[in-house]
Length: 581
Image (cartoon, rainbow, N blue to C red; front, side):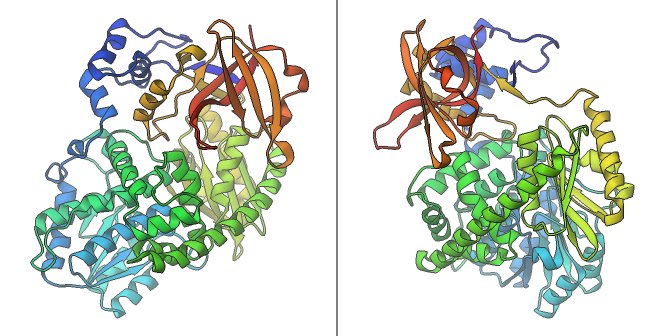
């Protein structure tokens, strides 16, 4: 694996490592942090002292005001009027984490405001993604007067037109890239539509858009005569779950929402979140990082949607008490185990198929019996292991449909747009997308997808690389630094976890552990720094020969606080190992 140093924006190409300017390091004193922290911010393009301060302390006061977002004001006025008039509002969501949490946000808010709320989450296998005319007609028969979509609707013109025919007012809230023709809604709230008040608003997840709508409506309505004022900050735990799960850039507005939402996830006042944490193996009041949410909590919500039971996840999040939420959380845990088993089977088959396409820069893989609810996860795993953009498809009623994931700097949505003549439907964003096509076009799509990856990224094979931030001696790693690094949380898309490079270190010991001994624990000695630390190398034990003991290596790593046995201690999460120069 090739290591490349993270360089600040606008650094001339070919520069492998640049020392931070002295003025950047000096800002550490004003911020009361280590110069290492200010250097990390600088490498991510954050240079001004006020911007650094906001990044480290992203308070809610930094959120965009509803008054500065004209489309938000328009959508909020329609919803607020419906609330004032006592009209029945229907919320149409999606079956993934973002869609379920966005639905829960609006349903929770509207219910607290005394509104009669209907909702619909499409069944993945039967209905697929988005708004459909049949579901709209069913909501009308139940008494719906205003339809509000969350995390969908921007590409569903026929269904929105049908809603208008039936006399519904329609507010579309979505965050996916809009098609050339917008749906005929009364208001469209999508931060990807111009103009927007700030650049980072365009990266909102569906849950974030729903939160802004709830906040704006709440402001218009004022205190409720019966229930008093409603504090929309109570919804931030749901916002953080949806934002983190949807792999959106964790910058600006998303960073503020996710960071503050994680504080609420830790407190777990919502019974459904408390039940989800316990079912996932966490203590009810445990503080969780973004990674623990993404790999621990949200897969269980996703599993419900992928297995056609998104309603169970929604009911868990809406549950009034823990006893009501707990059975749903247990069911989600069982569904997640079922999903993992199916994922393992499909991933094995997909990797074997990918091996037959080694000459292609982009992969198109499919299986007759692959589960439609798992192909998106498998696509992510394929990208991780091959470093190539991947489309993973399954068969359904004589057609193919599936999900794609991007790699490197490939714009997946633009890539699918270039292949649009072969597709019956597609949508999403630069990093992830869904698509459908006729089965006879799969080989044509393979050729076309390879061509668009070639056009965007060039002819060189997409070799695995690891971006590292800076050298870090073992002697510089202490609990104070690790607590300061936590200020950079939450990590994710657009805000990668810092990765450091060690001095040449001696491998004093190697121990393999875990099921089938696939993980490695190494004792490492930094003689220059006169410090010794232990590092964990996950799922890479088979790559390390016993002869590595006694050799000099350099490791790329992220330092962590290990609390496994109740005694906090510093250890390294090793990302890669290379022989010392």
